[in-house]
Length: 352
Image 1 (tube, rainbow, N blue to C red):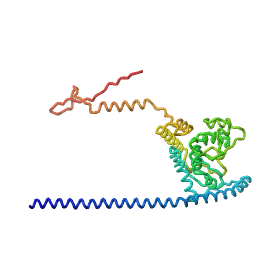
Image 2 (tube, rainbow, N blue to C red; image 1 turned 90 degrees about the vertical axis):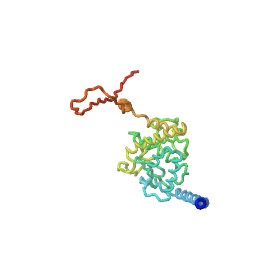
Image 3 (cartoon, rainbow, N blue to C red; image 1 turned 90 degrees about the horizontal axis):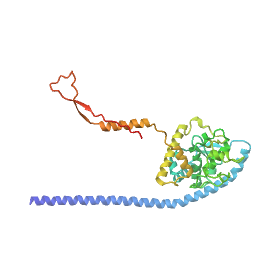
Image 4 (cartoon, one colour; image 1 turned 60 degrees about the horizontal axis):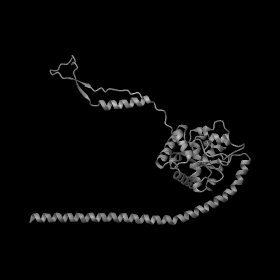
């Protein structure tokens, strides 16, 4: 009878534990359900907010167009007087959001440039009338002009144009060439490699210069017609604008860091091609990455010594045997033990 009571009590305890466990599972499910309900409410609120944001954007674009029409005449007059109209300043939160959206869109268009995009340092530059890049990878943006472009055009200007100037090291390759003409040749070499991006109309292309696609910057420069000029893209393109600070003051990306960035970006481009196949990267970018990622000459002597040493250790590890060598004279033990010798493999050299 006592044994039967113990069995029944054990079964009752198990049932109580099972009921408690079921209640806990139900509570967890209720918590998850509450989270889903909160998430659905949040999504509904976002859907309601989006039209309001769109209306704000439309009003902002209209306002910028009005300001731009009035500012063009003033900028032209001041430039005609020979004065510098570009003034640096800190970005506002709205401008920072605009440039962050453009950088994010640029990363979506060309994900293999993510290291270079992260190294860019945006800076507001009023009166510039365009977008430019410096030697220290500083991205100068005239937001009064930049706002008038669509998001795709903004991303194309950053990832497909200005970033290519510093990646291809146009500033160092310029040499003694004329700055404005060299900038025009570089624009032509870059813009023919942007089939996947939407650049603004009016840019310099090989067709506008009467040249075929696929040539280098030096070839386009030699074939430039007299008086050919392009937009000023900054010291990163070898054509600094008036009032641009010198990159030798230690700000921005140094020369050594820039070289390391170019090598890393070239490796990322080759990895992207290996993962997604040829055609996933523009032809000019792929050619640049191949030229940048060429294998360095390897000293065959160091490789031979390393591999022979590793094989020697693998073959001789733990391979010892008794030897018939004579025991040492200072041996004072009562029992004479044989000596040990290591395994010495034979090395054969085959000359083909």
